[in-house]
Length: 201
Image 1 (spheres, rainbow, N blue to C red):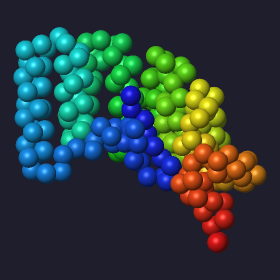
Image 2: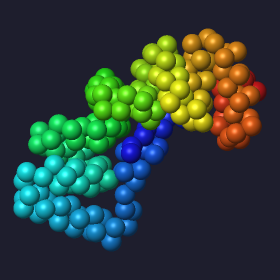
Image 3: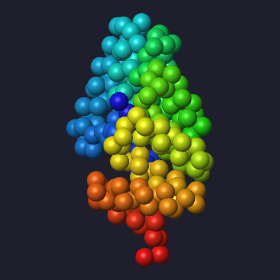
Image 4: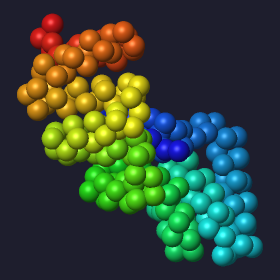
């Protein structure tokens, strides 16, 4: 589903691999025209099926891809009102939208709600860690990233962000252990982490 990536502290919702993946939309005029047509078609589908949460979810996703967040939120909230169980799909995206808007407390709330459906979802713990990192709540970030890793032991980005949290929390030795682990698995992340471990080099 959606996932927020914050390796370098830019809310690039791995783009989700979070809503930014969702959001990386058309860049040419023809792409924009096509997206506008898709939204129009999905609006028509909603009008024809006003009791279908799935229709609203598809419309919300189309709006989110165009970064039309207010319209996306309206559609997702309508889906939730029709079917509270749609929260399993909707809450992560609403959290990603809130994260993109720097509404971090709201993002946390959505990610917590998402965990009610999938309590072992490593991506949601990772998303929460990213929010805590933005809020400079290092202890909470550490706990969230550890949970993400507990449920996905090879989650390299979670290890990276955990190391950043350790550095910010004055636990450099813990971060160095992760650096050694990343050296064997992800050169890009290990080199980036080395820069945080040795900022004066």
